[in-house]
Image (cartoon, rainbow, N blue to C red; front, side, top):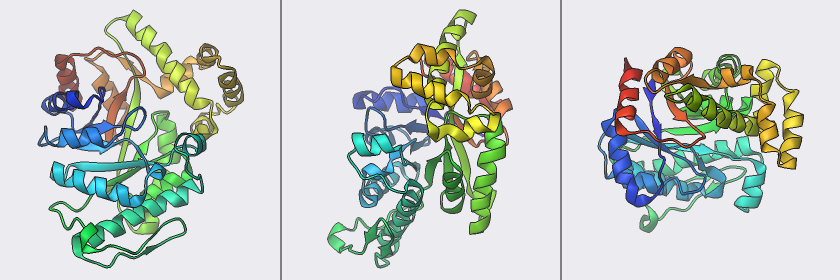
Length: 338
């Protein structure tokens, strides 16, 4: 199991130092996300500041872009990083696709599957000179002249991970992808009884093996050097759990534990803007199942104990202000490996 790290400061001038520190501290991959900033630009900077750490998106919103533009960006990042790039894609939910990106929302699972297949077709055209011909329900690509063809690169195999929560996405990841970004709102029971069987079903149908696939996630953690600090940070995690549990998208996680009755009231309180009231509805049992609590000295060991055999890549998800120095990051990575 690999320990990864999420980029914290998206100021492009701060990227080289962050990437260098993550690599020097022993982390395996530096992940960016698409929330307030573009997920690709920081990795272009990081690629030239590092030599060994992997660089990936967790995630970039697939439907906000044409597969052709995704293919170009990924191709350039793979070349710049000398084969260290991991392309992580997600569908996002209807409201964001329609109202934040102003894009038509349609059949997200099948459409994302086409994005993955189209990317591989485009890359094959560039690498091997094959005719570009992709015909799908949502995308069609049939034009690639030499003027627009970037040509082959040294490391043409770009791993594609997708984000998935429901059965279709998990099965599809196992069928056509190299990995699955498991949502931070998860439990070991949900992973063991829901995610793994669906992914394995997809792999079996495609004739693939477990060695061809990686499970990655950012894990909710409550980290603090004192009991008071951990208690304060736990409330922030509880708030974030309440936010996720209030939407139907994450129903499979709730269903795995019989927590479905919480969702309607959480949803109503979210509509009312009662965020503190939502957090109070999250029982300690759910917090304990979803999050791992500890100090920087022991959180790595606790994560390994909880997720060995279930995940291949983990990073820390801390929805609260974090002040951590290089020594703590290095100590955490070293302790995790031991």
